[in-house]
Length: 199
Length: 199
Image 1 (cartoon, rainbow over the protein chains, first blue to last red):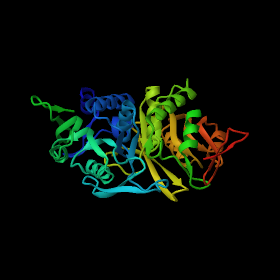
Image 2 (cartoon, each protein chain N blue to C red):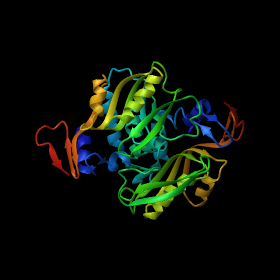
Image 3 (cartoon, each protein chain N blue to C red):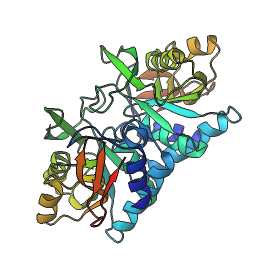
Image 4 (tube, each protein chain N blue to C red):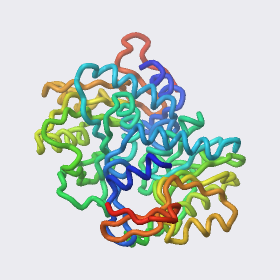
């Protein structure tokens, strides 16, 4: 998605070989017009899938997830990383390990909102090793809901998550795929020539 | 806001005299069309305020905040409750105590995104004693940004936060004001006759 790639080049910052900071439009400040266009793009890429629910994970998935749900006219459910006072009924949980943060979270979804027969589109901000996406897939599997696709804003294509999920048969659509990060340097996967752009 | 009040009556659940569960459309599952209408309503209520930023707090403020920001065509910033790997520059922090959760969080905003001269609209899902709103006001004060208003989805009018903020001169707009909660019973503040509706 060209607009997103321009944003990443203009405003993103490679903090290390694995960490891309996009706080100016996705992870802290959000650009609502970009979010809306991303939602429309995800809806287009998963057209005809008869999606009944969009599932994401707090907090940064909520923006793109909500705009996708708005375009598709279906509810958004965001998995909780933290215990909620009002999440009191039967819960579906899964463990998600974050390699960058070196912590394991239990993510939680109420089985009132993801139900058997649902056709679920998973949306998340980043895909690296794929732990968060797999946790969301696991939650859908536990209630016999079908995952019809996985939409990712930024895929770190130099890590294995995307390949593994595609090998398992999932349609994974990433709006931007990063081939490599070096401090101060971002390279996209799609661009085969003159790929390295210094930012 | 009539549509919201109907949603609260039809789907909300008073878990106690202070806790209202609205997980089906706001705090876990989100109704994107309702979020959009709430964003438009907030934009209308603060019309002419020359808002430059919408500020909210993760996670449940992001939905209504993003839709308000979209309508106003300004960025949304969501304060972080947890440490973020990429929030690395100069940070503005404030302490927010949650009486229901009995915990104190440090909320964090980068001073790159809320800057002197900004006219900030604060949006949040709930207003009870007003700790979260006051934390966001405090963050704006620290960088000489002006708070031009506070938009709340559901105000617990039986608690003091709204009154105190209005007494301090803030324009506080709540889309639904709850007068009283009893287990299984929700009463709105605006309805002076036949106010109690059993749900």
